[in-house]
Image 1 (tube, one colour):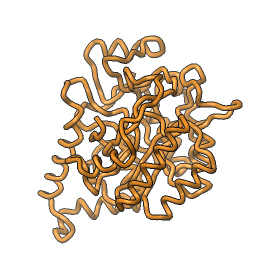
Image 2 (image 1 turned 135 degrees about the vertical axis):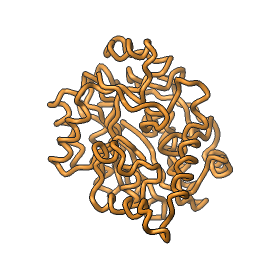
Image 3 (image 1 turned 90 degrees about the vertical axis):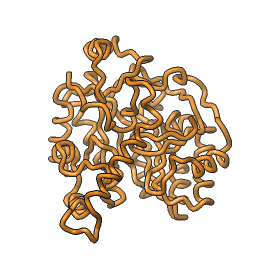
Length: 338
């Protein structure tokens, strides 16, 4: 679908297909094909704004079914979409995801759109996995993701780190520490997640235990190597760095707005979403039932139900499907550690 509701955001899929050759790819039949435009940037934005899924308080992710910086055409279309969003005075937070190189020229263009009024955050995926898992994401021995983070930071563009997928091959404490030492220099925070499996995927070659569990009917929001999240949390605390298992909390922290998904003071909130104290105060004020002039309990409960219903509306036609790869999901159970 051109417009979909993911758990974290509204997705605009105007380009489909990814040339990145990642062994854990979730795109199914669109894996490792040349990206194809579904429609023009103008038509895509018009359909986005007219969609019943569109809401001004929900972030919009551009082209998540490809890598926006994998090809020259992808970049061109991405910038065309930004131009259309600007023309239509869209105030939503705009996000995009890549593990490829964002040049200084690219960063300069993004910066220009921010100065003109768009709110943009770029997610850079950096897992710490070896070349055998991710092909085409290094040039002259240098990882594209690290170049992108540096260039985004240079231009003052918010850069969020996607720490995914956490699997046995990149969850050794030494590897986790190396990733932390890189991202803490450039990123506003990290969203960490394990491996989500779908019926058309297989991890039997590199994580047979997870595949065996999935084949037996276990389908959590993701599989995570035992202790990986806890190790990252310890590293983050030591480095005064923000990490999250819930992407909605990362974005709320960026926007300095309360998280509207009812996660405040949950076990995930307290233990695995390392918000700064200022952000916890923002959420605390919002969820303070003693201050009806701010909001009220019934409104928040209703809002939470609507958000969660919307999040599952387009992706739960089959029981086994969800969207936890883009954001840990709210319908399936919590992650399973193996």
